[in-house]
Image 1 (spheres, rainbow, N blue to C red):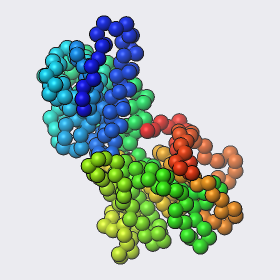
Image 2: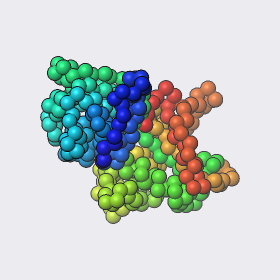
Image 3: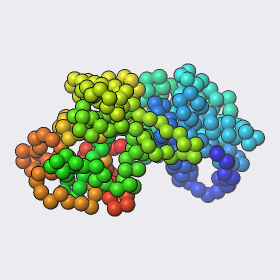
Image 4: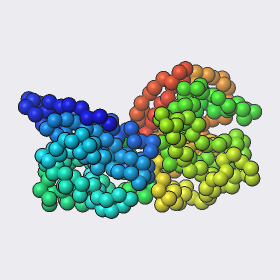
Length: 353
């Protein structure tokens, strides 16, 4: 990424406002890594030197973290990094993983100040990066832009805090909440724009889960069939079936699991799944919803009506027995995609990306 000339030196901007602006830039850079960084967190970094501003994001696993990449950009441009300020959306690592510790590179570059949005709950980091920088004489500020980054990194943060993946339940229905006709036909309830968006949701997920009944009824592939990069690179999610898939099913090879849903989520978490996309069917959707295991609901609503009570519903199972028991959440976003609506919901009091 090319550096941007900056006129921070000598301006009258308040430091807090500058920090917020640069952290927002770092968060935007982080979003560019969303489809390739996992199982690492998708992190963005901005480096402000005396002459220019540089930004970078986490590379695919095995590549440099955002902080190292942005320092390399400045070095490649022949810019001096001594006395610079580094903004990063997540605490720099202080341990050897696939790559050396980022804090070592930051200290060696002579960075004067590091602004961090969030401390990293990963037990390998968990404040050690901040502590190492401070011991080396680097000024560290924590908390700028934390709310936005908490939402952006929600799958990673939940995984590190609980050991379980962030569960996204994807549903597609008509405006009267029906997913299939009485004869079970349901193909293409929504239009092309909504389907493409759903494939991007798959691409952002580490695993896609369906029940064995859905495999028998629909024989889905559960693959990503669109690309979002000039190189045409596609990261395919792990395919997971609750139960046994029939021989010859398109979803195979897949991980076939059974047992209590919390145990299934624990197992997937141990496999490094940060975000789990659940695509059906109605019994699985009901079971996860009833158990309170869904972190984010994504509904694609088509401008269509079955117009009766015999079409198949979003959830298959008993609902709230009275109005007092109705599940109530928060609408995160509403977006029109072609003729359809994309609505995101989350449980009340829960934040997410």
